[in-house]
Image (cartoon, rainbow, N blue to C red; front, top):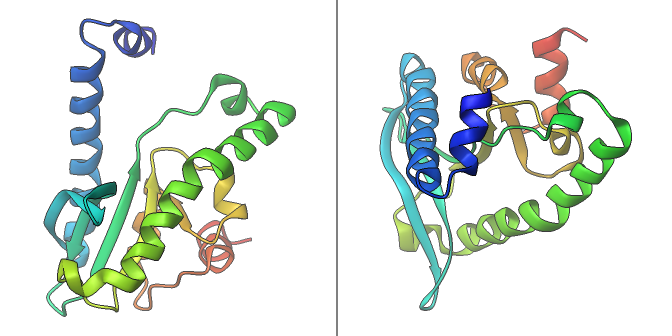
Length: 174
């Protein structure tokens, strides 16, 4: 953990390290999806409104039935105070995610709803977020946000639900 944060704080290797970590995380997501019939179509697929880039799709997966899963890969470590369950910091982190992160992702989702044909993506695609850690925003977002283990469970199901509560109740047997 100390080496990880040292590399992230180093101005010399920070960007190279983040790029390698992102690649490793995407590779992990692909390897999780492969046993369920999904293969990688594209990574870092840029989306545009006119000439303005509005972000990218981190990973596009497809199965033999032409079912597409578009994935926002969230490979960020939780802030330590959130990781150690500080309620005040967790609420502040949720607010930050809703205002700064979720708004950008929702803009891409809305763009894709209208423009999926332009990118040769069928209207039946599913857009999800796969996170390295369980995220507090999962419980408060219209986006489907799953940890890697929840993603594995989600893929096991024949009918891929977009209902977070249903998935979590089933996964954790609540």
